Image 1 (cartoon, rainbow, N blue to C red):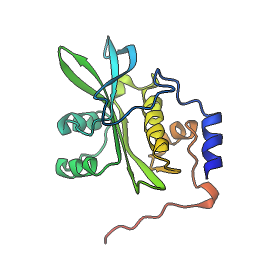
Image 2 (tube, rainbow, N blue to C red; image 1 turned 180 degrees about the vertical axis):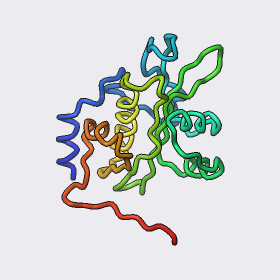
Image 3 (cartoon, one colour; image 1 turned 90 degrees about the horizontal axis):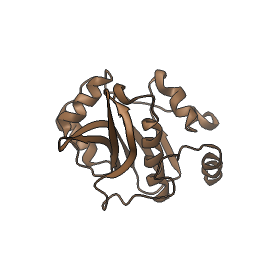
Image 4 (cartoon, rainbow, N blue to C red; image 1 turned 180 degrees about the horizontal axis):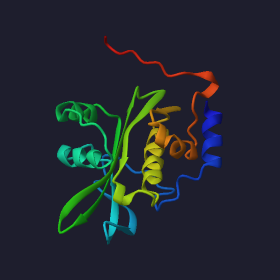
Length: 182
């Protein structure tokens, strides 16, 4: 599996942000400037990255609403975030207020495997590389922790986005399986 990651990082240049060769200490960094002077919502903003696990749940709900996701109970969303191995938020500040424009999280067994969940970028900021940068930072954090197998679930309309980042469907014939209560 390690050979896969060596090939992945050699052939997939997803680390094109100003954090290219810098690993972010999740506990030490409240916010890191990720993109300076990005156009969004008709204005120019600086976009920040935070690995702080605190996220305003109502802001996250609004962000998820903006892309048409089904609402989930906030109590359960909080539990999911609290039990995540890595969380990452993208935001800009205006008049001393934070505006959440991106989010992703990963769960892990902290040894071998991790799954990335809830990757979302506000529609006003899509198509500018923020999703790619967010994924790069999540993957970088997981690889720093020596996680070798990173999985995710993707809706059909975003599968190509993840394929461009080097994710493959059904590697070696492996199939995801699900169990749902009746």
